[in-house]
Length: 286
Image (tube, rainbow, N blue to C red; front, side, top):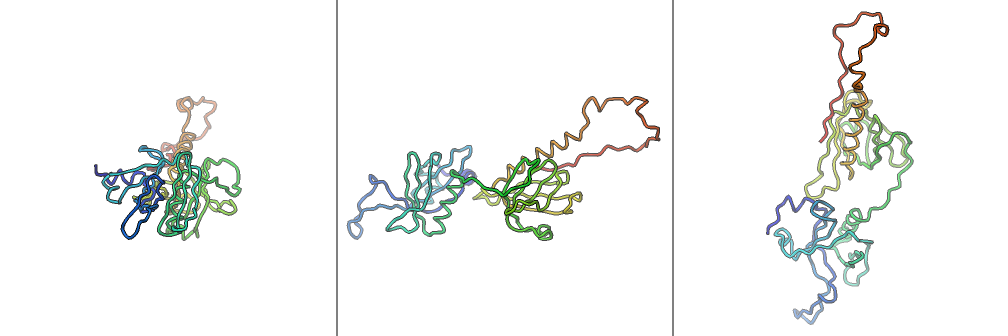
């Protein structure tokens, strides 16, 4: 059965050729030039993250074509993985080892760069390391995230570059120095009319582009800002929740909305015929 492109890339993290060290029972003798024992076999590997289609896993196929056609697939669950590390091999210089409760898999990439990338991505999926952040001023923090500035005209104007920590607070979205935790600048949540998430690419969606538009009411002035982050959905949901809370706080309670003021509480001033009620900022989330 041929695999559709949508289903193929839905939970894809990385794919490519790797050589796999065969278990002893699968090793065979070849008679091409001389009697040789085949220990390593080149196969097409696909690393997939957790999704409605399954847990984090490593799939391999006989060829890339077999993968696109959905044939000859072998799937290795990474749920119980305990370590991923470089491995020593006399014949393969870029090998690495996956160890779990039920697996012990030797793999080898074509280059050291490829080997490092496979190791890093597998670790990020199933063996994330605890993050140590600098001290960020305490207070009403509802979320703390790592972000990386994607240059725009407005980020250049404010001299924003590199890595930062982003916090979502009661009324603000703040940027902090990644080294010291010191607050660099802030945007009022009420003045972010557009706030959305974009996919970085169709093949790898671990990294997302967080995009928002700052309105006139922000201390930074109007502007368009973009950040690369692996936790874009969490930031979006947190900002959305806090914005909704702010809107609810500013709405009068039902008993106050219909309460009729007593004559003693009404100031002796002339009322205006054109009174208006402050409207809430309309934020667009996607």
